[in-house]
Image (cartoon, rainbow, N blue to C red):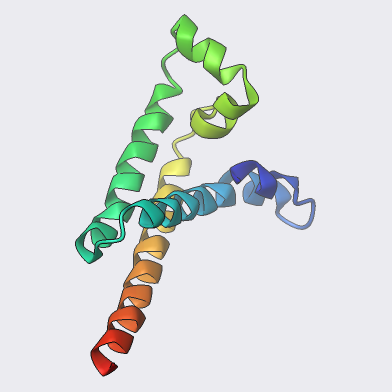
Length: 118
């Protein structure tokens, strides 16, 4: 998913292609986790866990054992754990997680407002 946003060629394309996909990466994993964990309490914690796990994966890019090198050489490995460490990804991971948290909060409010009206 993150790679889909790497093909923009308009104004500010370098910045957009390097950093904005990190926001969408966080949002994607938060929404995916919501499909697995539907409990309201879990949905509040999902953005925190996604941010934490994504940061761990980012730091794994600094480690180059043969197993990780082999995995990164595959397309799925590049997509899932990436190949290049950049400190500037962390603020965008945080932005994506905060956006996801706000989005999930809004969805929960609507969902529970509808059930209380019924």
